[in-house]
Length: 232
Image (tube, rainbow, N blue to C red):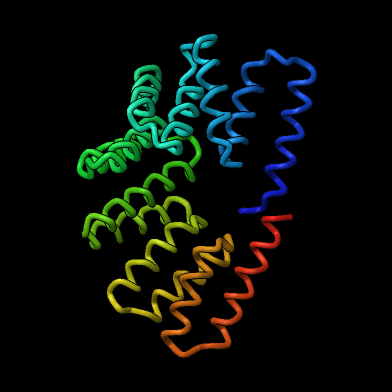
């Protein structure tokens, strides 16, 4: 939803869990997931690293550790954490992370292979699989394969029609091919689902290309409003 208030509510619940049982591994792992969203990567890396010594067989914690280390730029250690996660539970979540890791560290084809495996593994929550389909589309787009990217984005929407990032992906494809009106429609659809700053920024540029300056100004005002809400 991009509504930070939900993150605060979740944080309050976890605080209450920790107050009742400070040693609860699940509560601490949830705290790490919240702090990842808050971009407190150093704290998560330290806490999750300590937790791996207490519960070395928990794949979710290894995933959190890898995520924090990736954001801190320690790719070698992140790769080890993701590999450990995969060894414990080879599923959509671990395939997805290894795909992301491979792409960031320069192995685009390996990344695409792992993301395909993530999609094939699937998940009980359709949105999770669709999310990986959209990530696969992003990888195809970044490696100059627009036809494959379009198929991946469409497959994501077939599985989960409300996936905003798949509409944004189609918008990127249309913009790159000079189809400005089609790009606008897809970005508008993405923004109607979740009003992210990157969608407003893309729409502002596209509107200005079409000399729709009033609409472009409206997107700039939306960016300012989102910034104020985020600070609040």
